[in-house]
Length: 250
Image (cartoon, rainbow, N blue to C red; front, top):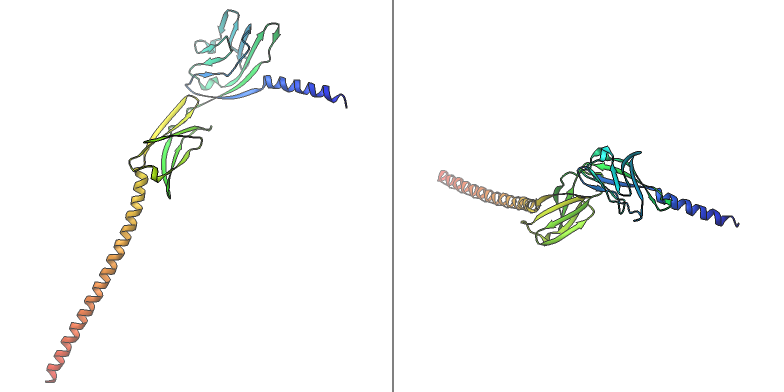
């Protein structure tokens, strides 16, 4: 059973090696400035960034060399190895590898897979009646989870991670305006909605109910009036017939 210990040590070393070269999935937005989250040792003597096996930038001592596709649109921080790409484009998507060398040893490379997404659409705000509450929705076309913020007049901002929030009716009025914002990375967009339409919906239903009640009352009143007049006409006609009959007999 003794060989198990050395085997376990080798397995831990292998896992540590994999952790060093493990690929991180990163997402950027077209038009933004994007920085890879690299944090290397400060005493690095050489730094090389590559994209899909092509060199992006190389630093050795005092000299920094940017290669054509990233020249004038990227920046290397020699202290921590972070690479920043300005005005990100769809063509910047790919696999990036950071290799750096410190005194008397070569460090494990860091690998990143960058996906470049189109900016999220402007959010659409909507309001639905749900009994004693309003359901405010803020939706946008985007494939990744978004960060949502809802601001109401006189109410602290509501920060949440789902596209809808429930607001008690007693906390807002018909003049309240809601601003819903979505955010991903550095991109933020917002839209505004007035809660008047929600209250208008309530008033519409109330007016409909009141209208039905009023119509019913009128119908009943007309029916009673017609019945009363019908009885009066019948009574008068009967009386006149009786008088005419009496005259004929005499």
